[in-house]
Length: 85
Image (cartoon, rainbow, N blue to C red):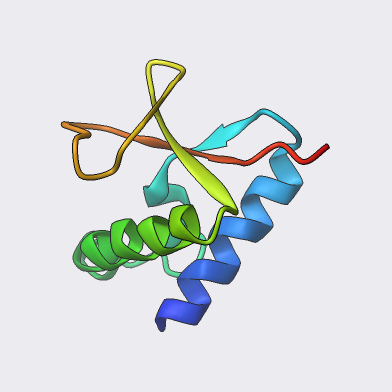
């Protein structure tokens, strides 16, 4: 599972989910493997890739429906595609 695989999985799942909807980062890695150990090991990389997507302006990180900074987020996060006008 590469960083590109994770990136593509995040964006694909968000596109499928629809505007304004969120995914858990674990959904993106579990979409790529059924092996529990493998997807758990991939979670830190998934968070890093999510941070890169935030920096690129493609997604935002949410907690309790509010946009938060990944560096300040404590606990579970959700990923949401940035709304385009």
